[in-house]
Image 1 (tube, rainbow, N blue to C red):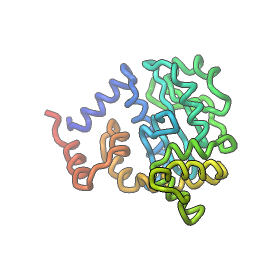
Image 2 (cartoon, rainbow, N blue to C red):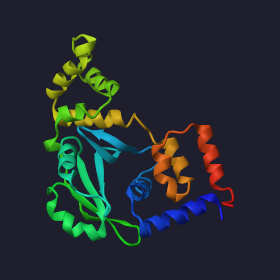
Image 3 (cartoon, rainbow, N blue to C red):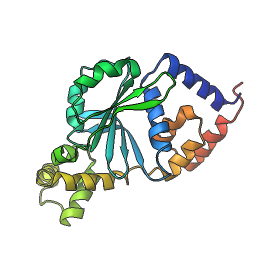
Image 4 (cartoon, rainbow, N blue to C red):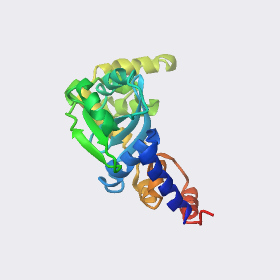
Length: 240
């Protein structure tokens, strides 16, 4: 048995017996990224700062989709705040949970939020599709979710210049300008600039050569080309 095969066996044990956050992230990466998108078509962002919350996974392709994981090991105390933040930023918002929790969780979700459940066979199934949220976005919330180079790049693309302000006040001036922008325009620009953050063409091809247990790791971890080759080769070595 190779190291990769051993990791896959261990992952299957986790799917059946201890469905922690990595299990969900890895299954989303497998089933909702690699199986649905061609290489280079989508970008996966893990632990994405979303206004005042931290989104588990975001997929950027032609639009923006966020996945908030609530396993049977989690509590729901922060869920309302998280969803409120996500609905200001993303076109599609989903909660991903275990099938044993979905019937209890569904009535508490806003009607625009989708629900995906993990079945006993390790398959992600859609209980309710998310509705488009483009009409309810906030340009200011999107601003506070972007890096400095990203929000400045958006303003340069729209205005051809940055606001006139001292370096100490530039962030505030940029935020004020963002607040004046159409949310639909801001979202389109956000999607375009986030696709430049982590293009997956080389990384998702590399991820397809890794054990299935390491799909999320391969997509979300930045390794040099040489390190990627070495890791792939190591997965084929005997486990003992």
